[in-house]
Image 1: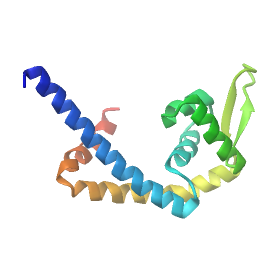
Image 2: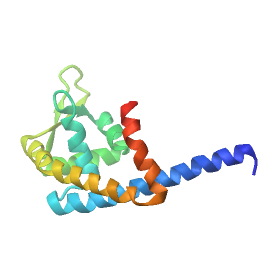
Image 3: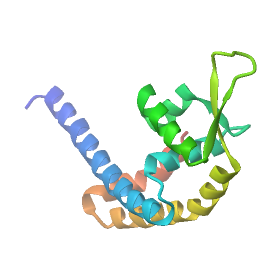
Length: 149
């Protein structure tokens, strides 16, 4: 293996480690959120992303980026959450072609009720990952990533 091949393998191994950590965390979150509030991880992510916006709303394409979903998958997701009365769509006052997605009072209440479950599950999943030698270094790096953002 040449130097270039070694560099590729190091990055590939890093990617596999990141994927393993993500899978572990997402699985734990999915089980906890479903049990507590009948929310999926991506549904929780939408409610959380909207709650972090000034004015509590986002355009659909912003939500798609926040959830790493396609535009059509985001639309289906928003439809499901709207059917549950957790969010609503409103027309943009400045651009009638623009549609915002906004949390409803029920969405805010469910998010506030579910956030402690999410946070405790995330903390527990990271502690479990810390005990896995292949994942420990990545878990240790997470606070530094946030500090550099």
